Length: 163
Image (cartoon, rainbow, N blue to C red; front, side, top):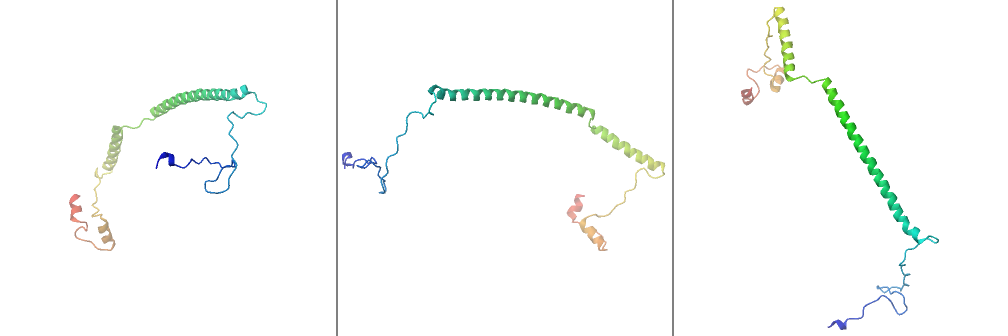
C-alpha cells in the first residue's frame, strides 16, 4: 500500500455546499466569515479609536505612580511614628526600673531578720521549731483517715531512699 492509494481527504463539504455531520446527521450551512478588520462604532473616527486605549493606559500609569508615591509617604510616616513610639516606651520603662536580684534578696533577708528580732524580743527562740508532720504520701494520708497508723511508711522504699 502506498501513499497514493489513500482515500481523498474529507474537507467537510458536500456537493450542496453545506457542512456534513461526521456522524451522519443532517448537514448544516457554513457560518459567516470572521471579519479581519476591527469592528468600529458607526460614526467613530479611526484615530479616536486608536488613541483611546493609549490615553487610558497613560491615565492608569499616572494613577499607579501617584498611588506608589502616597504609599511611600505613608510607609515613611509610619516608620517615623514607630520610632517615636519605641522611644516613648523606653522612656516609660526607665521611669519604673525592675528590681535587681540582689535588691530582692536583700529585702527578703531584711524581712526575715525583722521577724527573728520580734521573736527574740518576745522571749521566743529566733527560729521557730519545725514540727514533723510525718509521712505526707497519699497512701499514708488515706490510712490515717481510716484510723490506721502504720509503723512504717506506706510509700515504696525506692521513693523513701530518694528523699
